[in-house]
Length: 153
Figure (tube, rainbow, N blue to C red):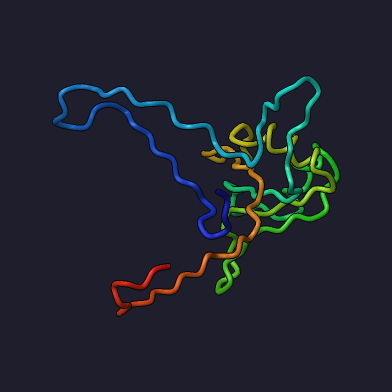
């Protein structure tokens, strides 16, 4: 899931068997990324169902500003807002942003066309473009101890 805490996602590269290992172990392919919707909807002419127009964008170079990022996304439709996430204490760029589109269709098109497919400048990793998570109320739990054994729920 996309979050604003850890903006720079890490990737692992395996070049071969570990030292001392007898041979290589075949790895299962990684699961497809969770884009927040099905990029290949069923039925001809169907469009991805997406409840949000707000996207999380990761792997943005630190020298990029909102004005540099907006044109990349405007190719897919009208952009209402671009907000680069900054550290609260230092104000430094954290390498990620939120982009809000005017329509769900434009947001879906941006995810399909940019997620892990588009690199900015000399960036080592491609952009991570996903539907932004809505804030979900946390489940609250309360521990109650010292109950008699005959008490039920």
